[in-house]
Image (cartoon, rainbow, N blue to C red):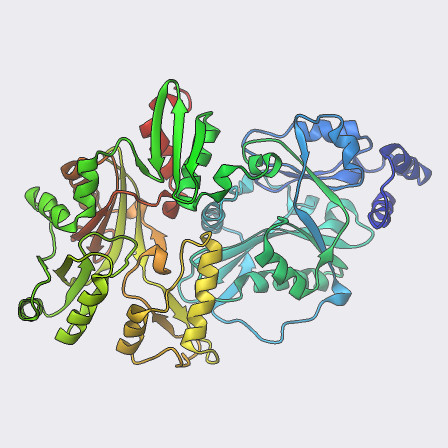
Length: 579
């Protein structure tokens, strides 16, 4: 298509009007040789802007976007002319387009181990890839809607952990030569995502390099991609690989998915992920949102004459008494014991002799502040009197009252109950690093912590504190040790997300006994929204020991389960779709 070559040359200067561009198409006799092109990617369509003969036609096609999808018009030479056709319905995407000419590409100097890259093929692959995309706030892919590969449609690739088989990354590639006879032999990268829980370094870089080298082997010449203008972490990676800015434009339709892009940052932009997930769901339902204190996660929702204040998932529906029952772990223990739930032995820390007697009775203990959250001041699996006394002093920085509990082996299970119904369940795993045989454990922890912070909006990081150091010492290492390549090492005992822990969704396999116990606990505490922590041998087995209850559970931690939807259902039942 000679018209494409024209548009590429024009991207380097001032684009002409559509009329002048089409006149050039006509000179080559190609005005009607290639119809306007729209490729379906499973989440929406990519419209190749310069294949549309008039701005009216491109605007009309964008406005024909189907509900729940996201169409993108790429390579738009004169965006102002298209926007003029529907200024209330379309907007100029603030993302940047970058290009890598393959003549500028240099292969990696070092390799990354522990995962493989392959095409998505099976139903299980699509399910795993969509789970990843939803974790990253992206639209899932419907493989049944993809433009067929033989018609120039896209290909999806995934990165698979070599040990666990988990999908830890994904992307989409588009061959422009097959799609629209691109004489410049281009291609593009879309939908790059890496799991926020991935402990392996380099997954994003390897995916991008894999696609570059795949298309190079097909004789193509360049790779384009689109990246949000403020995604500085991704831009640093692309600059490292040799990508440069491309002077072209992208248009989208105004819809709920794109709202933050065309409305700009409002007060909710400063909210943490746990508040933002609720605010976003409220806005989708037409509920009025007033951000009262973004830093504290405080906001007020108004709908149909009903007004409810929230701090993340803690709302006016939770009474002060119920909140106290959760915050004070002594009271939590008593309330749950009265309804016959299984609990660890517990007593307040006292004189060293009393603490030593408790340790002697149980062998291994946990120390935690009576009123604490996010794992602060918690020490796990203590076995000596010296460690117990040192942990008590650290815990007293958060509450003068400190608890001793018997230690129990098991996986850390969080069950989220909303409206006395189990909505989500996840196994929480402590932060860990994977050795590469070169970097110290301290350097691995710092790198993993940066990845966790970037993936969670700064909410999760691995602290280099005494608890982390104690965990390393117990395993025979310190911060300066070099971990052998491929060896995994847990660097925390607790599995809190705020200290770098990760989650594995187990909602679909949760044993009924565990679900029933969680609902009984929520009713005993008389709390409508609560996160309950249990130690279990496995999520599909009935044995458990209750640990604690959290009155302000993080709904964002359980995506893609519909936690925000069920929370808003509870607060505003008349706002439910179809009601």
